[in-house]
Image 1 (cartoon, rainbow, N blue to C red):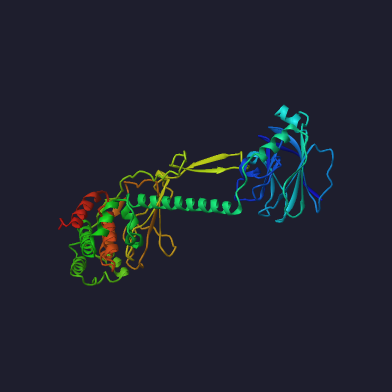
Image 2: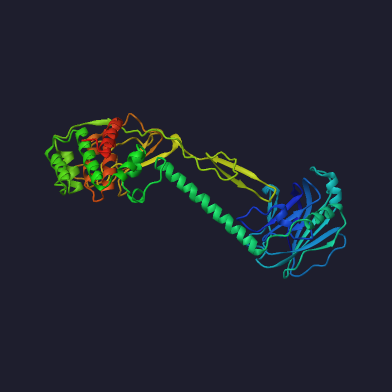
Length: 476
């Protein structure tokens, strides 16, 4: 025989529990005693025991014993009940109300007979509360031994408190059958899955500007997420316009980006735009990323033009759909940590958003890239970290090295965009050309428009109005 618990434990609302399911907070009172004739030890829910005490609040004497076989019954105990019990995991513990303290019981996952003995329940109930330093009023013994399941029994009844709880248990409706319990669990699972699905769809609608995206938009990749921040409705309109209009939009965006950056006077850029318009492959140096960036870096005719960063308009935060009967504000994620059926400890956290959110964006698209900006990573809330895809650090606010290899640049920004950051327009414009030549008309249009938005920077609303006119068939 071993005694994992011996001494005093604290009870509240006259309750303490044995828990073995780490994924459950325990049953409710009716659920714990449904179908029993004994009302002191509720074992109707698999893997849990609800233990009633006479004292409402305070410390009671409590001993837990684990035997190899049924121990003899001590006649000094005033109230005694027996139930059958099987842990649902190897993690078994005696747990106080509200999770105040717990004691590991180390029970095996096998069938046990449990005897719950009590003494002094009426005196403790009359006193209600025991303060520190006051004499002990009631004490309890909880015994386990391996035994096959059998009905619960009242072995001895002396106190009025025990009589009350026995009567309460016997007046409860019968517990659900295993089939009914399985059906209830199935329905609860389906309801949870439906709620999660509705939440995902609501979040997707919010991401895409209030309407569900087509499968083509879900699969398109590229810089569609970046463009979503500026004009979600335009993305849906481009998607619905068809391949011919998408190619027209891509060409228009590439041309406008190069015009804004002052590159159309360069022969090698003008040749690329002509090839785009005629549906031909891009000529050198656009057929090779490294050569393209080297040409940009070494051509003395490239203008030195910069523009303030493009800042997307603010949008309201995502508000999840309300769960049925849930009074919790939907801007909050609420969780409950409950130990024992009567204990509920709610813990609420606001979802992070706003100035501390991190925005991650690939600056260039369609396999080409350029270093767009560089800030000291310790310069405050708008610090940016820029790194090459190879993993080596890079910080290059000017042009790529003439002998350098092609780069992918990630800018991670904390807080709102810094309006003082200046973007090199020629470096932002070239990806619009290569993006527009992509094999997928939809991605070509979206990526080229995004590159043009970045090229226009703070003046991007004028560009988006022109793109809208092309999509509607009223533009040039």
